[in-house]
Amino acid sequence: MVYISEAHAADIWPIGLSAGVINYKHRNISDRINCAKNMKKEHHFNMSVVVDSMNNTFRDTFAAWPFRAFIVKNDVIQYISNISDSEYNILELYQFLGDKM
Figure 1 (cartoon, rainbow, N blue to C red):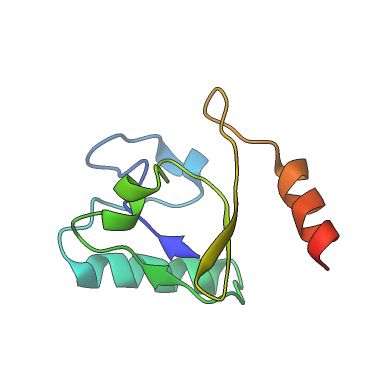
Figure 2 (cartoon, rainbow, N blue to C red):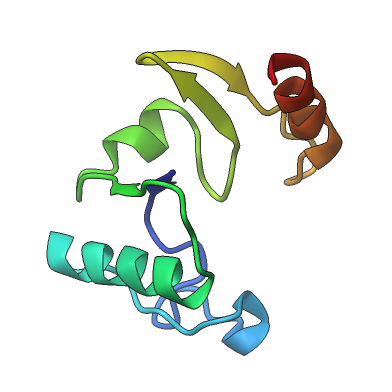
């Protein structure tokens, strides 16, 4: 998983606790790393997590904001979710994973 910029940072686009947590805009890479660590801990996330650069290279290159699912294997993108009306069909992701398992 790549942890990108906060979609609903409380000091930029606040939506309160409906996002599950209140985070602020990352001012530096340490802020982003700390938010990623907190997310892993809070959600018992067992997947590897890396953070995007402060230049938001991953987010902007792959149009990952506000969310998008990618499957990467051996440094090759195997799957990118399709987004329609700011959402994607999670069943497509499950089907892709099921076909590969």
